[in-house]
Image (tube, rainbow, N blue to C red; front, side, top):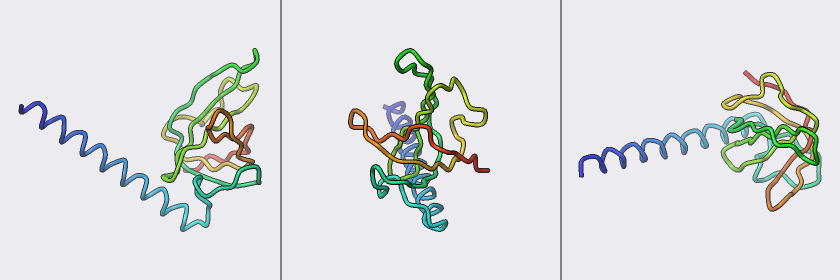
Length: 120
């Protein structure tokens, strides 16, 4: 019984941390006048920024493709750089600003070969 309450407290703490992080990301974007991922239109040039959650190497059509999941507190955007195995500085936990067009692929929002700027 005691172990379950410890687990619940840990899960609650984690959920609160996630909520606080999302709120901070949305506030920062709003202060800088950056459109959120959730509010960004498809197939139009946009600039979004957030935290890189994951980075994965996934070949596409026999060629390397680097995928990164970008989170800004409002939604998730998959960034895909075709022909790249890695990009120095693009790693989980990194703050990044990207420019490009958002499309949809298998119900996911994606941006291919975005211009990017690593943020401190």
